[in-house]
Length: 180
Image (tube, rainbow, N blue to C red):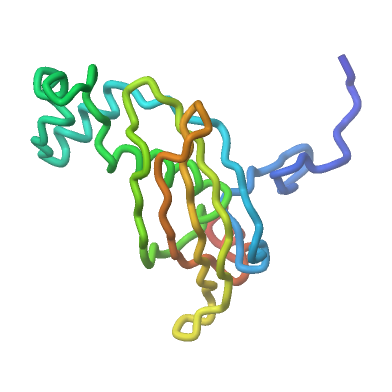
């Protein structure tokens, strides 16, 4: 075991005091380059609780999501996870490294549910930056647009959508003011 003091800041952190580091969350406008692709980790396994809570919170009564007998008559041996669960897990996986400092989500467009998701599937997210520019109406913010894709454990794409959100132009200033 080494007793030496670390002299470098670990990747993904910034130095805030003697021997003290704070994890970076989110990014600022200059951190985004069109064409960048971020693979987000860890993956997230969809649980029965995720599925049932979503049905209860949304009031979704579609039998394809809740009635195994109905599903069996359609040739399925299990219920489908609601697409909003898939969207939530995949979009949520992208937040820490992309929009963790956002002040507003502006749009979700071109949402496509491309392959069924079931309880027990593990989902992984990927973000491709398609636009990054300073906001004309709020110059302290940048507008970032990206294509987010979600893949299951078999690397099959299950969801794709475009997301647009604000990020600070000066991430360091926001981190300093908010202690992030």
